[in-house]
Image (cartoon, rainbow, N blue to C red; front, side):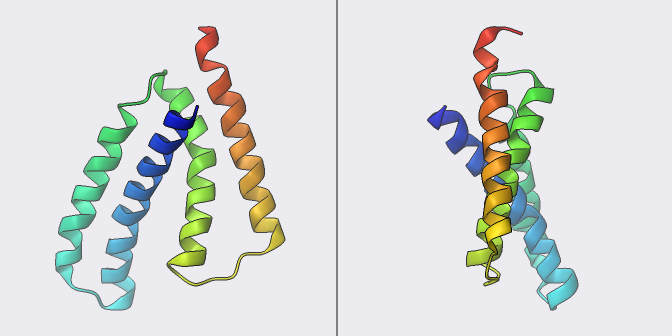
Length: 109
C-alpha cells in the first residue's frame, strides 16, 4: 500500500505541476515557455497512471483521494494559504476512501 500511495503522490504532483504552470502563464503573466514543462509534466502524469496495478476506473477513483490531499498540501506550501481544520478533515476522509478502494484490489473483484 505504501508503494501505491507514493506512486499516487508522484502522479498527483505531475498533474498539479502540469496544470499550475499554464495557470502561471495565463493568470500571472508568466512566460509562454512554461507550457513546455507543463506539457512534459502532464505526459508524465499520464504515464504514471499506467503504472498502477488495477483496472483504470479503480485507479482513478483511488487516485482522487490522494489528489485531494496533495492539492491541499500544494495550496498550503506553494500558494501559502493557511488550511482550516475542515480542509485537513476532508483530506483525511478522502485518503481513508482511497485506502478502502486500494485494499479491495487484491481481492480480484
